[in-house]
Image (cartoon, rainbow, N blue to C red; front, side, top):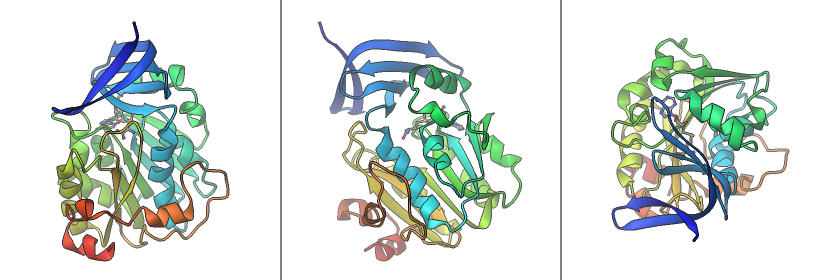
Length: 284
Ligand code: SAM
């Protein structure tokens, strides 16, 4: 009898993954953590019943979340990652030669420990000497961050679901703190989900970010294991336009290219219509 993991994208649409075995299941202070060995995508991390990242397709999301802001910034030396305890984003950021210092702030230590054990291709860079791991809520961490401390801030969190730990990272108060912690020419990006199912997330974030940053942009990619076909990222920049890479990537990637970078800011109307008019105009 085959085993399946099922996730509800909406009350009327479910996704299923055939699994060979459950490698881990446990409860931390914050969430239920599972690692499932899926037949199609290999070992995969599930938090509170939501597929977070799989060994088979994580390269798409992590290359796009890391390389769009890093190539758009001329000297991305200090990087803050909030969330990202599976290590995949840190691995992509640390490939970038200009990066001198990465601070990864993950609220749930158990996610890091479980990822080290069961997601080895994600966590290869967690012992890089440039990386500092901090176990804390990203919003509280920013309360004590120095003003203008970071060139780039990346928010790789769980979705703003109910009173889950990720919800605080989608508030105006959090964006204020993040703006303050960025350097005068800093760039930030956060994942803003699948607009097909949760259009309110990218609308809510861009409505707030456009008030605070001189540039607000939305770009997308497609992740097979994320429901809704198209997955968005919202960028806020104090100076450099994230649409234009100013550096090239000199190593082999599996999703990111300069052309994919520029193309990813071309939005289908159903997504553009969710955004404030200035962003629609800038990206039309
Ligand atoms: N790629 C995934 C996605 O697109 O949803 C994100 C994966 S990563 C595992 C999400 C991480 O964000 C989790 O490990 C979770 O513990 C962490 N997280 C959620 N809220 C947080 C917060 N307020 N501060 C720091 N980390 C947080």
